[in-house]
Length: 173
Image (cartoon, rainbow, N blue to C red; front, side, top):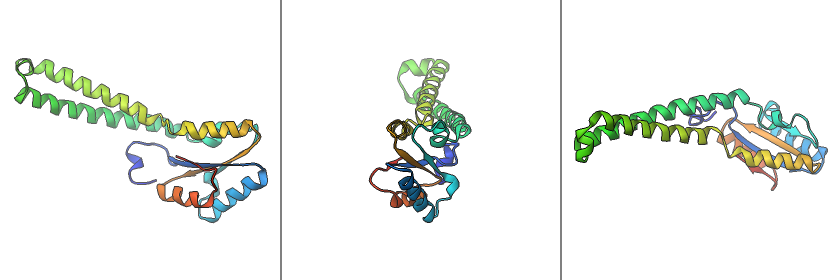
């Protein structure tokens, strides 16, 4: 995992790429080319047409997603609260007369506002809306009788390596 991913994301493989293929043979060749570049076979999934296990193959880390939600909300919430307290302190010290005359209410209101905004941002980040495109492409390919190879990469370097092995049908996250 890259050094920046662990701060918010609880997934071991937060970077993904996928590529669509017309046949099982082509998909297996794609998976083999990923493996030959050093991506472990355990990180590569092949989604076949009408695959009942597509969800687990595309998003296998449901517990990691839950960890991401918790980590993001705790970290963003604390940061939002601290920033809110700092802004409130600044307003009480040198702000308008209204904020200086009611410091307790200023601290409560501003801190609450910053914490809530940070928690909303945490929800947007932790839900990983960038995965929707890859999931939808895999679902469409599955329904159209095509094969999809999904590589779950543990770093941006590994993701770049995986890109070199695939063709133009790649979808990167």
